[in-house]
Length: 340
View 1 (tube, helix red, strand yellow):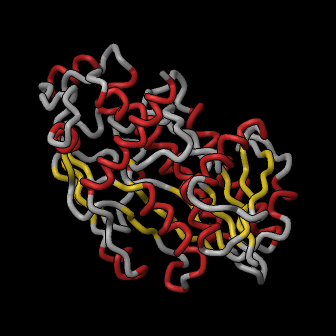
View 2 (tube, helix red, strand yellow; view 1 turned 180 degrees about the vertical axis):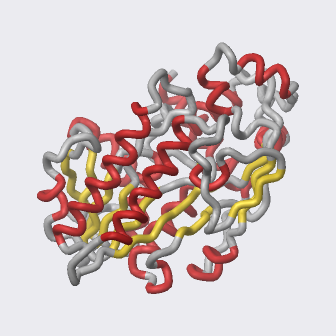
């Protein structure tokens, strides 16, 4: 049985990747920052599949060298998903950039040393469309300009982490060349396995369905379903055509934030507001509000993506977005009721 080290298994994407790996017959070693998080992860995964002894855990920190070599022992592949994510703009951008870049390089160096065949890295479409405005069309060759004035710390962290990964792969020496494939999702929605609503996407849905979002930004972007993202991560481990490539895993067409609200409204979520906020107002609020400042690169823009290569390489079709929205809402609603 082939073994995969999955960094960031306690995260939203990590949990779904663990389920997908176990379903596909891999053994999983999942990294967490603290082993106290493992019970929540085990319970979430067990709702989808019985791990049957093929799930183990280890402690890793993106900013520390400790434990990486041991974590890689006996692993054939690595899914490097762990990375800091917050919409809110931090006081110091290095709070996001350093762990993203250094953690990625730690994972790659340790994987190379251990003789791992391939690493699949989670990047983002924000590594592709930052610094541009209006109608933005992205493909595998698109990169964010980290020096552009409206590029946030999060955009920089994902871009610089991915760039450093490709640089490492290009400059590696020795006979056993480590392979790399990269997955670039857009904003990720889908059901939570653990009922943990602390992620940005879950928190947004919680506020939407409980009527805490009075107005919505005018923003169109390609969106992702966490189950699609997990399935492409796992498919990219052994697909020969995936080596050395970036894969955009999103909807085929851009979706308005307002459309999410309209789907919910027409499916009985009565507290959801579908009103649009004037863009000038959001830009004004962003001067005082770090969370809104983090949203600004999306406000007033339309982000389109070419997903044809992902579809062709993996014989894949994006999940219908209405299903994504309703499955997310259902799982968030269930979690809210549980915590009442």
